[in-house]
Length: 191
Image 1 (cartoon, rainbow, N blue to C red):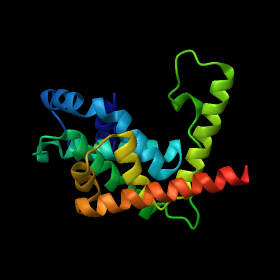
Image 2 (image 1 turned 90 degrees about the vertical axis):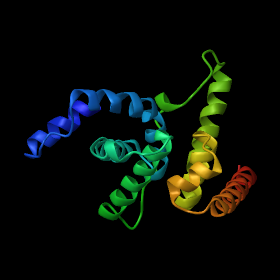
Image 3 (image 1 turned 45 degrees about the horizontal axis):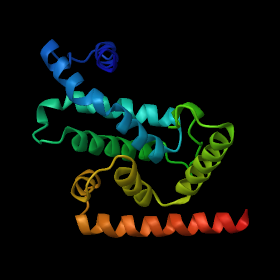
Image 4 (image 1 turned 90 degrees about the horizontal axis):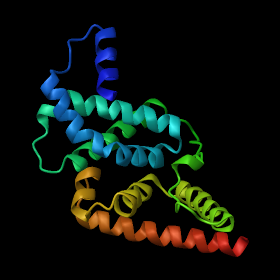
């Protein structure tokens, strides 16, 4: 589906085709299982769904175009690195003095299959609070938190995605957790 869109855009721009059928199948097998992870990272980095979709589309186009350059054993790390770089390029092109953060739509929330209405309300309040507090963190803190806590990447893999030494990843993660904990505590005191 995404590959078909990429091929259509390529054809519209008069560019030479990007792939053969075997290459397309290989890309689908390697990249599509990581679409949710790519979207989650982009969603947290951009702050809203529409921009995240643009970043992920650009990242998948790049990944498809440079698929033959993949020489690692961890496609997910390679792809998330491309998502991050696509976000940085998107940020340069769309930089504004103030980025708006929109909470994730309810259909993106992970919930128990049959929670009570009270549990659903508390979960939604906690999710919205967490999203708002995460949005206040510096981008380098948000990205390491997302990659570690949501995507469950190792420190080594996060270092590869963010292009910083593992020690820097560990210190950023520690600072990010402390900042988030302090923000949460301050929020609780205000409530």
